[in-house]
Image (cartoon, helix red, strand yellow):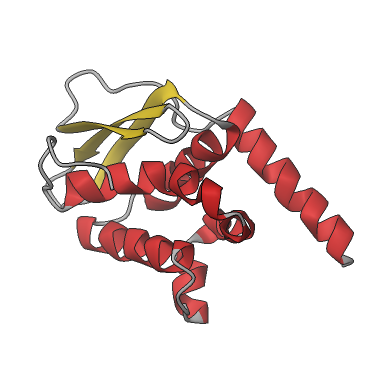
Length: 153
C-alpha cells in the first residue's frame, strides 16, 4: 500500500471517530467520573466509567468539547479498553503515553492499542500531543486514583 493511501486511511479513521465517536455520552450513576482540560486549545473531556465485580471496565463513555484529534483519540480509547481489566487498561494507557512521548514500544505493546495505533501519526505534530492524550489522561486519572484537583500537565 502506498504511503499516500495509508495517510488517507489514517485521516479517514480519525475523521470518522471524531464525527461519529463511539461511546459518546454519559453514564448515569457512573462508578467513576472525571473531567480533564487542555488549556492550549480549550478542549474539555468528561469521562465516565464503571468497573464490574471482576475489576473489568463494563461501561465507558465520554463527552465534552474538543478538537477532532481529542474526540477521535477518546473514541478509539473507549473502544480499546472496554471489557479490559483495570490492570490491562492501565498497561494500555501507559503504552499510549510511551508512544506519545516518542519512546520505543514493542510490537506487542503497539498491538494492545488496537485501532488507537493510528494516533502515532499525530505524534509527528508536538502541538497536538496533548489533544491526542487527553482522554487517556482521564482514564489514568480514574484508574490510578489521581486527585481531581491536580493539574493536567
